[in-house]
Image (cartoon, rainbow, N blue to C red; front, side):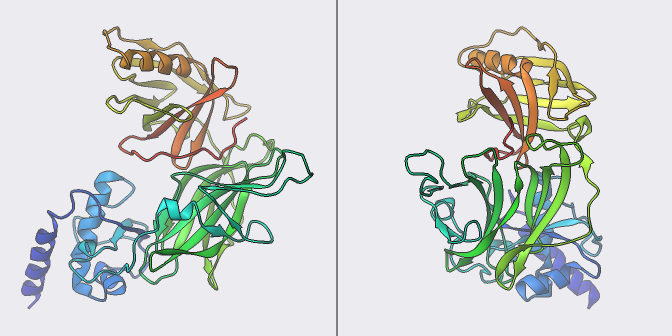
Amino acid sequence: MKRTFLLIALLLALSLSTAYAQAPKGEAYTVQPGDWLSKLADKYYGDPLAYPAIVEATNAKAAEDDSFTVITNPNLIEVGQRLWIPISAEGAAGLPPATPGDQLTETQLKNATYSGIYEEPVTLTDGLYEGKPYVEGDASRPTVQYIDKSGLYGDLDGDGIVDAAVFLLERGGGTGAFTYVAAKLNQNGQPVDAGAVWIEDRIGVRSAAIENGQVVLEIITQGPGDAACCASHKAHKAYALQEGQLAEMTGEDQVLERISAADLNGTNWTLLELNYDQPALADTEVTVSFQEGQISGSGGCNSYNSNFSLSDDNPFVVTTGPVAATQKACPDPVLSQETAYFTALENVSQWGYVFGQLGLYYADDQGGLGRLLFAPAGAAETGQDVSAAP
C-alpha cells in the first residue's frame, strides 16, 4: 500500500513537471513548526494528495528567485524554508479554481477609493488624488499618489482568493513624504477597501512581500544619528487584517542595523532606467555587480570596472572612481547609451532601495539629481522610488 501511494505521488509529480516552465500565480509561504506538504495541500486545496503541485511550483519559483527552497525530498521540509503555494487551477493539480473572479489590475487599484489616510476616504484618478489648496490661491494642497508597479498579490483574508496590497505616497506641500500601505480585498474581481496604514516618513523599501497572509516589509528608516532627510537603518514591519481592516502587527523593539557596503557586496543588478522615465534599450543588457569595494559589469557593449565606497558619516553618500572599459566598437544607439551610463556612474553620489530595486543617484547636466534604476539580475519589473532622496 505504501509503495502504491509513493508511486501515485511520483506519477503525479512527473505529470506536473512539464507544466511549470515558469512559476504559476500563487503566494509565498514560510514553513512553520508542524507543517508538512500534505497538510498544506489539505489546507489550501482540500486534498492532501495534491502536495506535488506545491513541490513543482516551489521548484519553479526557486529557479526564478533563490530565496525559495528547492524541494528534493517531499517528505522533508524545514521550518523557515520559503514555499510557493500555487493558487490557479493549473497550480492546484487540476483541482477547481480557488480564485473566483479575476486578479485585481493596476488600473483598478489606481482608480480605487482608500480610507485611513485622511478623515474621509479619497478616490484616486489614474493614480492621483489632489485635494483643495490649504489656502485659496496657494499651490500647496494634500495629494495622494499611487506608487506604480509596487503592488503585491496574495491572500490577505484567508479565503483562497488573491488580494492586493499597494503603496501610496501622501504629501502636503512640506518636506514630508509619507508612505502608506493599503489593502484591497478581491470580491468577484472588484477591489474592496480594507484600509491604509501609515508606515513612516521618507523611507526606502528594500523588500516587500505577502507571506502567510501578512504584508512583510524591510524598510530603510531613521535610526540613531539620522537626519529626517537621510534614513540609513534597516527595520522590519508586518501588517495583517484585524476585524477586516489592515493594521500594523506589534512586536518586540528592534535593534536597528545601519546599512553599509556589505548589503551590496555580492549582489548583481540589471539596468531598467538610465534616468527617471528613460528606460534602458530593450535589446541590450547593462549590468553592475558589487564585490569588495569594486563594481564591474557590462555597459551594453563593453565590459567595465570601477571603485565603489560609502561614507562613514552617511551610508547614502557614494564615491565612485573613473570607469575603465574595454574598447570594442559599438553601434548607436548602444554606444550613446553606454557613454551616458558610464558618465552617470562616475557621478553617483547617493544610493537607495526602491521596492526591492536599486537606485544610484547622480548629478545630471541640468544640475538636478538623475537616477540609474536597477532590478536584481533576472528580474524585469519596474518601480517608482519613495525614498525621497535629497
